[in-house]
Image 1 (cartoon, one colour):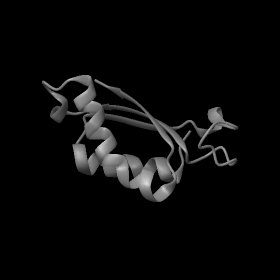
Image 2 (tube, rainbow, N blue to C red):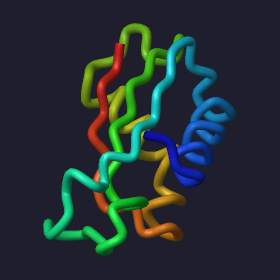
Image 3 (cartoon, rainbow, N blue to C red):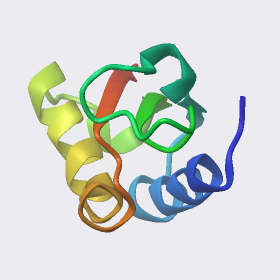
Length: 88
């Protein structure tokens, strides 16, 4: 499922981290009624699957921090509540 916000997040990650693999999925509909859900089924809960050369030699925590730091603007300004991150 793709949304405009997921597309914007993906474009931002491409610019910030230059990934070799990237998938941003809006999974908000699966979290309806949970904390942070906005009742629309879109725009609050995301899954990011990403591989990037900048992850080489970094721990999983450090890789996740890079992704969170890159997406902080969406948390602060767009109401993103949760991001599940899978790095390779």
